[in-house]
Image 1: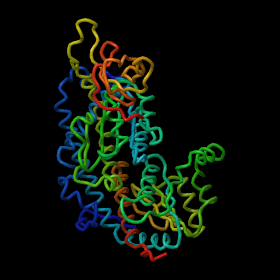
Image 2 (image 1 turned 45 degrees about the horizontal axis):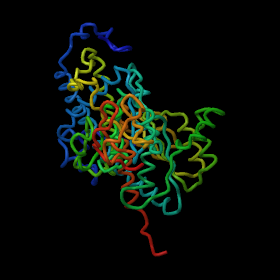
Image 3 (image 1 turned 30 degrees about the vertical axis):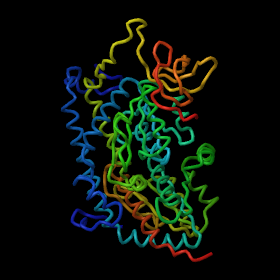
Image 4 (image 1 turned 60 degrees about the vertical axis):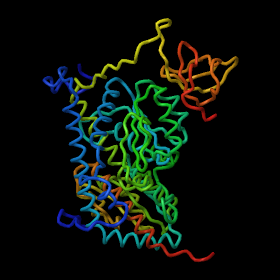
Length: 220
Length: 261
């Protein structure tokens, strides 16, 4: 048989006859191990190479949080969910202090209003214009580093005096060279999956640094 | 900034990310995880091949449910086909899932084994006719809690949710599922014998979920085929949320107490 819309027509010799799933399952298990090993190596390399800048950014963010600053995260597609995870980590952490953080992709009324009435390129920019204060921090996730709506928002946030942090993949794209992205962490991989896995690890490490650098709370 | 090379990788940061060195093998996956995700991927590919939808539920970490869904619906690898996957919000929860899902669909849950809404959904999924995959960390779920369990046993769930463990887990699930589509001969569901049916009425015992108590011992139930009425006057202790066995229109046994929801 051939599944509707399947690729069987490309591989007629593979079709129909194959009935024993054993060899495929063994291949898949090996493939999973290999991909996980690649992911772990990439993560270790990037974390080691990023440690100094992560420390500097985490310290700067802690200072801003201490002064009442807020974290605003953004991203498109899977990266919007990574941004949302970062927001959950900072705002409702498993340990340490909850900090003000929210995702600019969260409000569907605002997102669809801007996307429909103006264009998707401005969905983050217009929110930055409307809501962001100089003490805030804007963090953007883009595996390509080229998302136009992030770049426009970074320009505006930078102009307003915010701290801007980008997480990109491949060679970093436009985010790596834009002066509006003050700190850009590039995960040098051609796989969007492997990039996102390491971006999660970078997010976690950044959160750890921020928590450690917050000014201790005094009595009220 | 500059990025690392393999030679620079010796010193990693401390904390949760280093836990893998104790808990997992050199490749970073817990023992058996590769085999587990392979089995889950083939089961999922078979459901897709037969028209099933993948429902994604992560009550404590909704972002993971959205990430899984967008992964399948809008694939990042050129040439891979879009597949029907939908995130069920934490607000919609079990009630939303019950209404939307159809027999032959699949359900992937990203949650700890303690998460109440995840447990409720997974306990009911067999009654609804779903194949289930549970991704999580910490103490393992009880055997049989899901058809496929992809687990990071040595890790703290609230950390694994943010260090990339779960992201890696469903990325692997997506990648392997698409490999299965290159093997159309293996996408036929193996024929499973469901046991002999009743010689009198031809019906079998079916697992269903009780939704509402009606008049005269009647109960409204969610079966794999949809909603139906059954007679519960022969048994005690049936309440909304109960999982019961129905045969020939009558409730024979209560398998799990209802939550009274």
